Length: 585
Image (tube, rainbow, N blue to C red; front, side, top):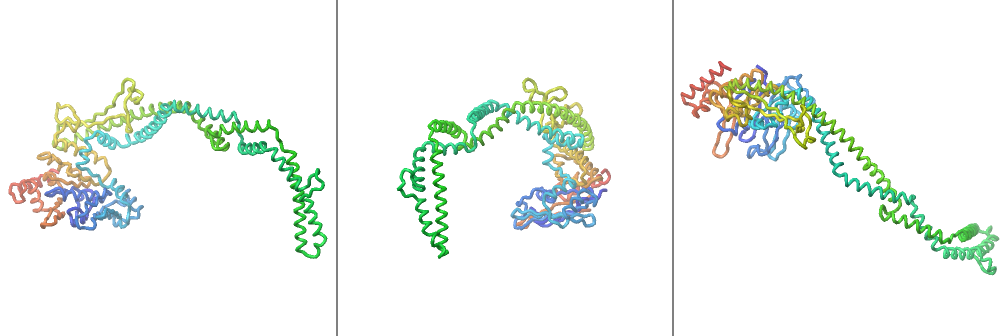
């Protein structure tokens, strides 16, 4: 008998449960009750403990918060223990304490080994602790997508390794195909854009503008256009400063300043303040002579050539044509030309890029075809083993003649759509992110029957047994020590129910098994029988969990069989079930 991983759960203020302790058997624990709400709370509690979604509506009416605590037996050398210790949790003699608190306002907190941890960490540990198989999973397995996922997981590395490579190549192919489609479908727009860019670059290259040239030419045009006025003004200013040779009697500024300097120079020694003023007047004289000389040179050098003015205006017109189209000034025009040249290089390189992408696309499609074949071969091999194991399980579930198989097919492409697929086994087939295979679970319930999809080829009871067989086989391939089955025996009764209980009891020899069930035939095989009981005081409904032993267990099985705890026939049947379970499990 294995050591129980999940030893105990304590539930407070969750749904209809006020305060309950759920002690679980190291082997097979059955959870029963008159109605499903209380049993659901047990399953919900385990889900919260393992990082499941927290809904504040689960908190009992009038309570501030719901709390679920669990005690787990964990091997100190396991990955779970290592991850818990990495998060700061402490193990107490191989026991790990886990708790989840859910407030009525919706806040959720998690604790692990006495330390507050993210709720997501509980979900990480759950993958290595408990496998939950419920009615939702059962219905999900009716879908081909889930069947393919189950088969891939069962196959292990034989599928997961090439599938990882295939997924990477598939994503790259999607990216290549998207870029290639954009380049080819926008060829006309790109050609038009390239022509416009070339035209603009040719216009700019023909003018050959220089940085700042427009400002320089504007200044020169203004000077040339007013040359006569500028020369006259400069000559008049020169005469005012240095004198006019044609008017010897005229008084100029330089002569006046020189006279002022002479008047002060003779007495400057008598007062330092006056000496300072004398020096400043001397400086003014020097500045006047310098400015007068520059005015004379300016007037003589001023060019009033109308041909040069015409050339400047013509050049300015060419530059203005560019600034109207490509920028506010020549600096912006040159910036536009630089960006446009780079963009034109990209557009001119699109043809080369299309060639490269086309070659890469073809290479990736060929690679995907090879990988898809590898995946198909691995799935086919795993499907044979999986189907044989499920068929063997069905023999233990009162379906000795049923046969389970997998249909693994590819959808072939014909006609002009061949380019949309990949080549697998010499045929062009459709493909997706998980390969080219369509996987479907088939059932032949009796000899001579044609295999049909399990959702269509099985009755309600047969479907439950098939799904349970799949779950048991699938669970056998999972390295987790605890399995929770939530009413996967729905639709099963009579002898088949006995076989279901017997099979779960066998599974419990190597793992901890917790089953929420409404079948006495299943509950009778449990090592520990828990009952969720409801009480109602007229105002509030409460539930609790109680272990059934001895006479109490016989009474509970009698109630499940006949609805009457004290029925002699039901009690006899219950005792017979327990005896058969003890002797035949």
